[in-house]
Amino acid sequence: MDKLVTSAAEAIADIPHGATVAVGGFGTSGVPWALVRALRAQGASGLTVVTNNCGVNGAGLAMLLHDHRIERVIASYIGQNKEFARQYLAGEIEVELNPQGTLAERLRAGGAGIAAFYTPTGVGTLVADGGLPRRHGPGGEVVTVSPPKEVRRFTVDGCERDFVLEEGIVTDFALVRAAVADRHGNAIFHAAARNFNPDVAMAGRVTVVEAQKIVEPGMLDPDMVHLSGVFVQRVVEVPEEIIE
Image 1 (cartoon, rainbow, N blue to C red):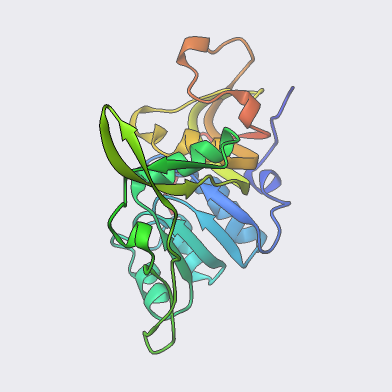
Image 2 (cartoon, helix red, strand yellow):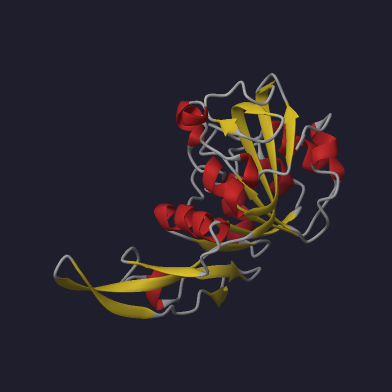
């Protein structure tokens, strides 16, 4: 099935207000810059964004933050994004922090149809016990915290250990950046740009791939494909990766 669309604007035109959107990338590597810019121009607001980090200062998802278009973020890293930190501490945005590997697995599990899974990561911390601040009040006071999660004991390699239950993530839309893709959505990522992108792509009900190059079906070596087209609904060619 040919999934090629003509522009980034066309690819994200139907993302509605209040949608959940997973976005690939790690730092500035593998970020779907063109799709994020198109989403900014499109105007959807009240968004819940699932991503490793919410852009760098003034670039990527940080532009949506600047425009106050994001209501909630599920991420693993605030980092050096000063606007993200400011909005979080000022009570302008809700943040659900996850261990990085847990976030990746939650996305992958959601895409694989797995409702939840147990992991040892976070046991004995606020991740499992609850109490991580999710939203602050205008005075900086904590008004919403994470709830406690189910913890069970399993025997692994002959040793009993505690594991915390984490739920899979499925989003309305997913935006990813690939190096090469064909018209059917099969995609290859370049080096570190692979990062969260395959997991993000799996989690979206509607997944859009922004690719530096589009080739015809059959031109990709099947053994080199990182993302199967079965997870992709739209593909758009964006030859240059422009960071802004």
